[in-house]
Length: 184
Image 1 (cartoon, one colour):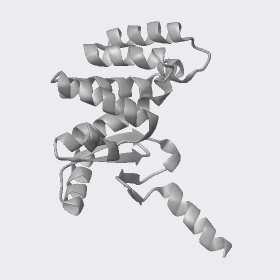
Image 2 (tube, one colour):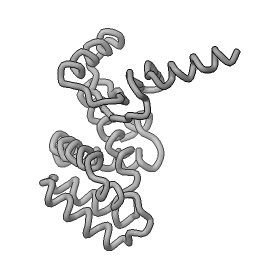
Image 3 (tube, one colour):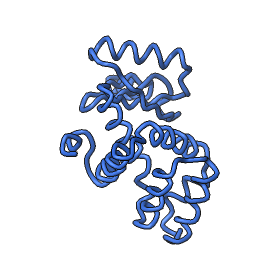
Image 4 (tube, helix red, strand yellow):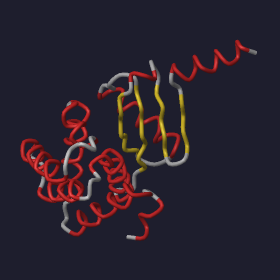
């Protein structure tokens, strides 16, 4: 799919595009997206799983066996499970967060939506997510899919990225700006 090349780039983009193309072919775009959302939540909630995907000390065989067990325990669909096996064999599990973001962007584009990467200091409630999506839709003129990451380091506020545009209203950035202004 040449049309996807502008949406995702780099190694993770190539993997995301390959997974997306297979999902389209197999009429499994939504089931793969659901599996990837489950996997993303598991990565965020488990230091052991994150270590499995990023540690260079884990062998290909151990990574493949570990990720297959994780996929089975999470009930991931067959395509996503097979894809994770390929990532493990190619020692590319560390690219998984970027692959998930890329896939979500491709799926959103297919639905006619824009994907926004949102970084928040704390998890957003469903009401906050709906309000943010509505504000972004009003500003962009298109439906928006939110890809939310929690990063306590920003202290408060949000960092929103849509394509090449970024809105940084984080408390950390505001404090850094104030510090620079006070230095003169």
